[in-house]
Length: 510
Image (cartoon, rainbow, N blue to C red):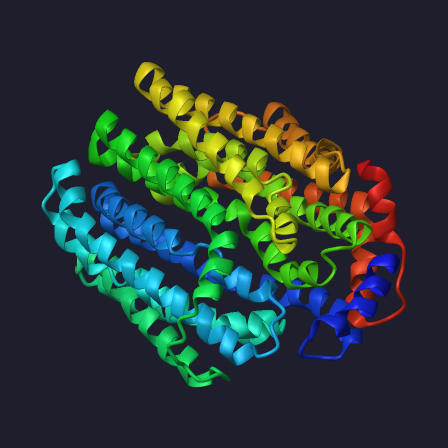
C-alpha cells in the first residue's frame, strides 16, 4: 500500500475533505473495521430474527411475507438511483446547498415510489390470488419515503465519519428485532414482520434529523437535476434488474409450487444474501477514497485488488459452508418441513460465490462519473434470468432453476471481467483462483472426514465437528496465503510504517 498511501495523501486535501489529508488512509482502513463490526453485529441480529420468526410462523406465513417484502424492498430499492453516491462524488463549494438539492430530488423520488407501491398493492393481491396481500403491501408503502428521510447519513459518509453512519443505520435492525420477535412470539403472526420495521425506520428517521449538521430545505435546481439524472439513470436500470430477478423468482416459484414454494425461495434468498456482506462493507468504505483518487489508475488498481482479496476471505468460505452444511441447518435447526429448501440454499450459495467475484467493480466506474457500464451488466443479468432460469424451473424443477441461475452468473462474470480489464488491466480470474485455495483445502478436509470417520446416521456432533474443521482449516489456510496483506492492513490501521504488500498484489493479479 505504499504508492496508494502516498497518492491518497497528496490528493486528499485538494478535493475538500472534512479532515486533514494525512488521515485518509487510516480512516479508510479503520472504516472497514467499524463497518465490519456494525454490519456484522446487525446481520447477526437480522439472521437471528429471521431464524426465530421462521420457526414461529412456518412456511406459509414466511411465503406470504416473502411476497410482500420482495415487492416492497425491491420497489424501495428503485428509488436508490445513485443520488447518494453522486452527492459523495461531487465537489461543489457549498455543501449545505448541495445536500439540500440532492435531498430534494431524493424525497421526490421516494414519495413517487411510495405511491407506486401503494398502487401496486391491489395488483399484487390479484396476481397471487390472496386478499391478505392487499393490506400487507399497503402497510409497507411508506418505506421509500422513510429511506429518503434518512439522507443525513450521506453527509457523514462523505466525511468518512463511519462510526456515526453505522450508529444511525443500526437503529433500524436493533429496534426492529426488539419489536418483531416479541410480537411474533405472542401470536401477532405475519403482521409482526410489518410493525417491527415500521417502528425501526421511524426511530432512525427521527435520530437522523436530530443530528443532521445541515438545515433541511426544499431546493429544486434544474441544473442539479440534470447532473444527478446523468449519473442516476444507469443505476436505476440496475435497480430494475434486481426487481425483475427478485420478484420474478418469487412469482415463478409461487406459480410452480404454491405459497410453500415461495417460502422456500424466500428462506434461501434471505440466508444466502449474507454472502455479499464483506463486499458491501469494503465497497461502502472505500467509495469516498476512490472518488478522491479517481484519476490515478495505478492507485485504483491497487485498491481493487486489495479489496477483492480481502472480500473473498469471507465470500468463498460462506458460500462453501452453505453448500456443505445446508442439510444440517435444516435437519438440526429449522426442521424437516424446510427440507425442500436445501437445494435452493446450496444452489443460490453457488450463484453468490460466482457473482461476488469483482463485485465492487462498478464503484470504480461510478467514481469517475461513468455509471453506464453497470447498466450493461444489469441487462445481461436480467435477460439471462428470464431466458435461462425461469423456463428451466418449469421444465426441470428446482435443479433446472439452479442450473439457469449458475449459467446466468457466469455470463455476468464475463461482462464484469471485460470491464475490469478495460479500466484497470487486471485479470479477475486470477484473484478468484487465489481466493479459492484456502476454501478448497477446507472443503477437502471436510469431505475426507465424512468419508473416513463417520458411520451410521448423522448426528449434531458430526455436524459440529465438521464445521469446526472447516472453519479451522479455512482460517489457517487463509492466514498462510494472505498473511502479508493482513500484516500490512494492520500497519495501516495502527498508523505504523507503510509497506508494499498491495503493490505485490498487483503482480499476482496480472
